[in-house]
Image 1 (tube, rainbow, N blue to C red):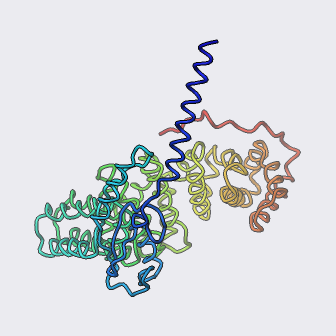
Image 2: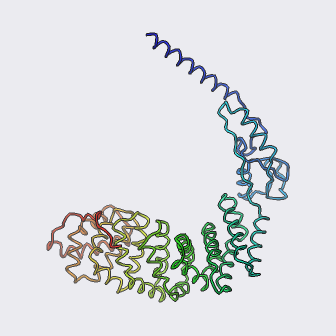
Image 3: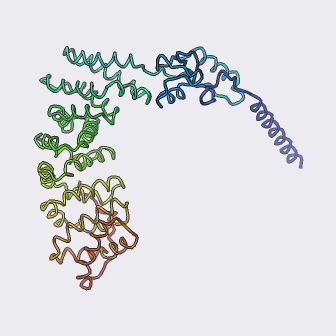
Length: 442
């Protein structure tokens, strides 16, 4: 009885203490000069414009990025768009936070001072001059490392470097190193590749420079002989270049010894999911068009065993990779030799049927397109048609038309249903194949 009474009294005391603290917090007012005039919140990184008004950095930079060149309070045109850090105000705010820490107010951390356009220009000019004067790669590497560190500090720093043409200068520096050096400056080039990857997406001019013969040779060399990080960075940049879908770039890649093998190896021996996706996208852009160079690329990829590798990858992969793999297969199956390799591989039909209505609408469309290319051409191949019927192709395609799909996919599915219906009575549908425990040979 006594213990219960003590517990209740302790509970009442704690509740009353909490109520007092809550009331104190309500009464505690943030000084008006500590608040940002735009957000009306406590400033974490106070900066002052040329008009003398102080704002929180995030708020005023957002205001300027939206195209405004006036001070929000005075409405006067700002002389410079580079706000000046107000260290005195920041220290006052920090002291106020410390004094009121008992009320749950945390001290704001001292922010890093972002890089200015002038500082960026100086660094980029130094990198250019080091390359032109052919100074030691060590000094160039140190400058690029310093630049990369700054870029990684904040998105604002990255925007500042991008706005000052860092992508173009680094791409040109890489090109100069590959053309002028008899032996690759591996460490410096690795730093440049790594920094370019952080600056993605690149502008058109940077992509054009990276797409030159010498730069492509350099990236393929790193794909074949470089470290894991170098291979990863190289394929990211190749993906960015191949997005331009210019035929002559595909021709240049085809001329480079071991280029296609290196891309296939990244799929066969994955480093990480993002690298696999980048490699698949690069391959997709190489086989996407109907140009002669793209047809040559398809033929070479087929000879390298890409069809079988992609089918095996489909057995157990995530949604994004699955869509990219099916997209490549759909393009490769435009060629006679691609369809032949796919038809001769035992897993092709069961895996494609398995992916219908199970991954995404895009994956389903690609799967129907591939099945249509394989079965309609081989309408006399009873074994192939019976195999499709056995794994439930008829039921899946019928359901697809009922639930709805695009017109193009619907037409192909209808053609496939007509073909399968002719042989439907000859075989019995078996249970859907379980591919979970199927092991890939690599």
